[in-house]
Image 1 (cartoon, rainbow, N blue to C red):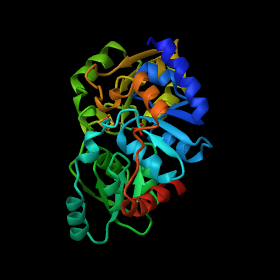
Image 2 (image 1 turned 45 degrees about the horizontal axis):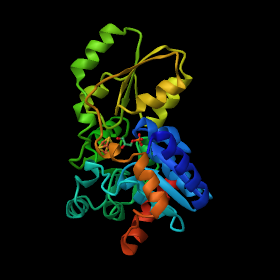
Image 3 (image 1 turned 90 degrees about the vertical axis):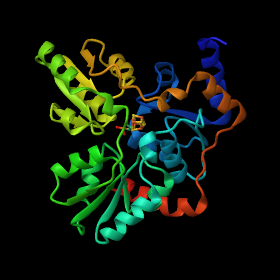
Image 4 (image 1 turned 135 degrees about the horizontal axis):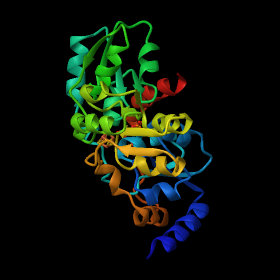
Length: 302
Ligand code: 13P
Ligand code: SF4
């Protein structure tokens, strides 16, 4: 089936099932193009909670679908490819978090949304790259923060906060591939460019940033800025959305290597397949969900 036929069938089924399609900013261009909404982790969670649709096809990775499933228990959350995962989400174990909590009993546990439901169940509050500092600063009664799993985002937050940070050892392998030498070269070539860097990049890359932002806020920044040139240090596919929204701006990808394999697993065939067969529903174990949901709900209230 060609893409036009696939799109037609997807749209027919979307109506029949009362479904919406949400896509993360790193999804393949053809997936972004058929989505009802394209955005960052926080935006996808907020929309899946608010929508009246009965079915949400979540084109992203598993932790995003799990988050949506926990905050919208009455909706069916379908992940087009069941194996679409985020390696960072698996980089800290429940045992490790319990050990850290034992060692720092007075610390609040803040977990980045890129984590499993089991890890969220061990945490006090969740955050995304878009709201992380606001979440940390909302913890007025805590002087210490255990931040899991992203050590680079945690380190960045610690630079703007008075609190003591205890960091886990996780990181994003995709963002770790962005080379600082390449950014230096691009900065020489495009002297007037603004450098936008994702919070998951290494501290060395962040030192070169004009702004450290979530994927959604990067898109907003480019749209609202009067500047023409931008060096974008995050996953490749965000360039599709940015170029569509800003056809006259000069958008330069900081690294051709920054490709997230998990995000590339969803495609039009798989979206059609889940809508046809209503399969790959993402559900979280009830006991885990009860605790993990609190951690997400607290974030959504702030
Ligand atoms: P955002 O919330 O900024 O979209 O980030 C999600 C993610 O996984 C980035 O690697
Ligand atoms: Fe996970 Fe990195 Fe992919 Fe984001 S880009 S989903 S953090 S592996």
